[in-house]
Length: 256
Image (cartoon, rainbow, N blue to C red):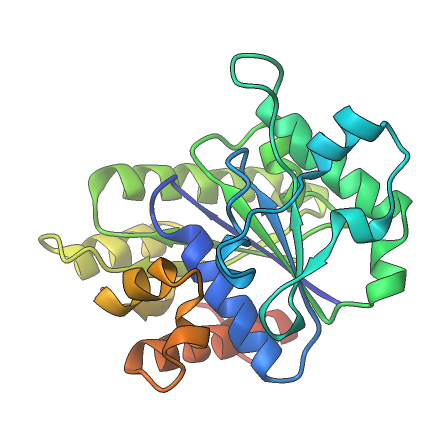
């Protein structure tokens, strides 16, 4: 089982990217589980026709422990197994707690033994890397962390903080930094800024995604781009990125 965490600043296009990567991996015949680790609980929405799903925290609040795996895990496009951690009532509680609760409940109820995913994708909000938000980096969870950024200053700043957290955890047997993904916003010197960021962490830009109006059009239909426009050049960009990420995790592609 390959376990991948994708981090990035809120609003950077992380959930869109992760959902299309999940769809691309599922196209290869792999069993994929996507775990949304954002309190908004919208990571898997476009894998499920635009329909939100119950979060693990909601289930715990409403039913204590009296719920099944099928209540937590719902199938989406191409059979992608969808999970949403959820968050606290606004203004109350810790958002990171939802991530901890979700990952603990999935293990407790035997999700990995029952579904036997080939790939687990964690979609993690990266504005803060502490508490529950750092849990997917910990030993036993993700093997590799990929960081999504654009050339915008705040996105670069957030990406650097995430990479620094991975670096600081390195000695504890936590996940390794798999590389950076550039999600283009067409700002000035974007490629140069992203390349400098990667070089600062002895890493590289492992994939670049161009801006495409088709992404928004697909989401208007409640779909991933791979479902709505499977033959588009943008779909091929997601497929290429998915292959590269898988290759890095398998040790077939070197990050330098």
